Length: 154
Length: 404
View 1 (cartoon, rainbow over the protein chains, first blue to last red):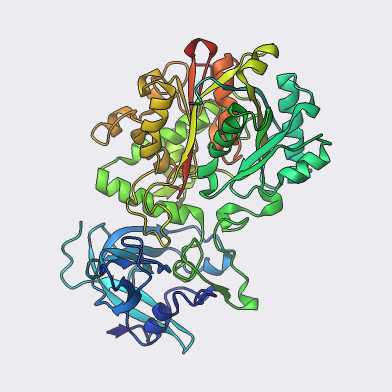
View 2: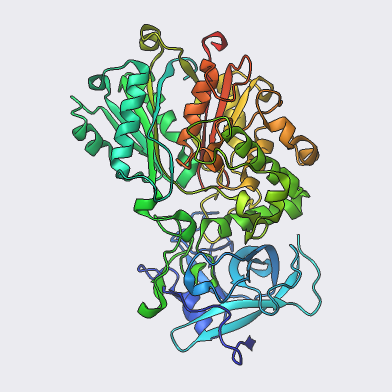
């Protein structure tokens, strides 16, 4: 797994992610800290879901667990943010927000940023690979770079 | 069935102003809108026995009833969920209550003073993630709604950014041209020029100004996004029998309802269909309830948060398909009195005032009364839709006496 280290985080630290007060999504954030993507999956019907919930929305089982996923992603949609709605972002626009689906986890989607030139061409269906962006030992964000062979999508 | 049992008989609004420009509190603006609506209907304030709103309106029915000295509050309700998507759901609740006799005279209202409660475009006012200043350090965030842990740290914390993702998907998946988005905005600004109450009256938008306006979040330019306002609006709903006693032109509720489509509320943009207004399901249901088809609709008052969502809504209500969207959703088709599908004929959220879609009801009633500043000749049926692209949507169809 690649890790962002030389240039630091893509965006300033304005919002710091915390697990939900209920702890429902703590395994997801703990997984990222360890450089691993884990997604909730139903023990009964093997259906994936994200964000996590207390019950499987497909078979209504309460027996759910967290499974590691190889985060090969496909860009489901994207936007290039230009307007710094908060002053903290004013030196950091434009930046690319991508919505990445994980075919290996039932097509669930994660929000992230696309690393590299913020003016690069982005298309729905582009394949992307994960990059971990650590923020000390507090949390890690999951970012993305174009995959070596950017094909596929749906 | 609801058809024809309830009518909107009064419409009222506060003065409309840009955000930060009104001198009164949001609560006072709502009170003024309600008084104006009651006066318009010729209904004594004492007759009001219900208050309904949506999107966590801060102006609580109990406080309103207390402030106005209402004798008995029989219906106080807030349409749950969906933000602006609930902007017709409260009318459905009111109509159901009146049709069943639970309440007799209900005011449906919404206040929105962004100068007081925060600018939604900055992720304030309960819409997104309000960021703290850097001096105080990062703000801890949780969850998977706008600005939450799954979005905010990636710089996704304002509504235009979230709904830009929906627009990109629509443009690329359905091969929609941005000219369709532009037409939605041009029509709203065009209609505002004839509306004395519109905040954007005097602000003339043309293709060049749209095309050269600054990017907010691709593909949205400035004029793809709604404005921010200090405003309130209200309508009075009563039974059809009571409406006929009042000496006003009733706008009958032909159908109304809400729709939360399957898994539509999945956080972090995990809803099944990203390029969808979420109105496709309710459209067919309300057409059946109202006993009409899209061809019967004279004006379309569709919640305009962002242009792309309005395009999706027009498709889902059957105005066109994604096959011919770029030919149908053009400026000429969207303007009164000459267009086939007059859209947001008061200027809408974009150019009249951002009242979270409440202004759309007032304009729907005006069209049926024949009193719009952009009157569609012979208008008998108005569609009002809340949403689009929200986790929950709602819609109402109003008709004139002769549609019953």
